[in-house]
Amino acid sequence: MKKIPRTPARLSLPLSIAAGTLLGLALGAFILWLRPGWFDFRRHANALTARQAAATQWAPVIGAAVPDFTLAAARTRNPMTLSSLRGRPVVLNFWATWCGPCRVEMPAFEAAYRENQPRNLTVLAINYAEPRQMVLDFADELGVSFPLLLDPDGSVQELYQIRGYPSTMFIAPDGTLVAAHIGLLTKGQLAKNLALILP
Image (cartoon, rainbow, N blue to C red; front, side, top):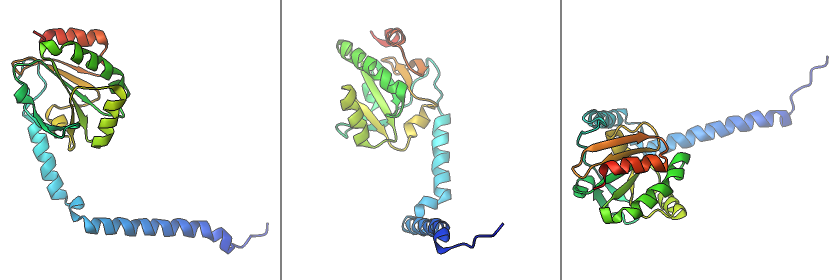
């Protein structure tokens, strides 16, 4: 069998791949040079340790007082502090735009929020680290009127030890956790848990 010599045309693909790889590595090195903090492992390790320490200070236990936090509302950019809602029943919903079950249950939260305004129900939907405009588009698409809060670094997610989406916590007017649910809430489950915190 006659061996076919490599021609320049046959060499062009491997050379293109190699050149692209080298160019990508060079561009990556340049970006890291401009932002050296990205590889400051000690700084990131210290931040992670602080977040882990905060998370271990509270566990979602029924009857326990929930920890306070302050996050910016997506629509107004104004800060909202959980403790300022003391005296009102509060639902905390942890969600993300890519979460299918989150999208399914949002209309039920909206209906419950509107229906229970005379009973001072507050619903706070805490988004995990997504761009503000993406959160606003989601709210507009589904007609959500209750506050959507931005948790850009995930610190509140860590504080509440959120391990899956959606996760929902029902907080009594005295600031204690009454019920918690991981996963999609049906309308019946939502009504049952709301009955535990509504006056």
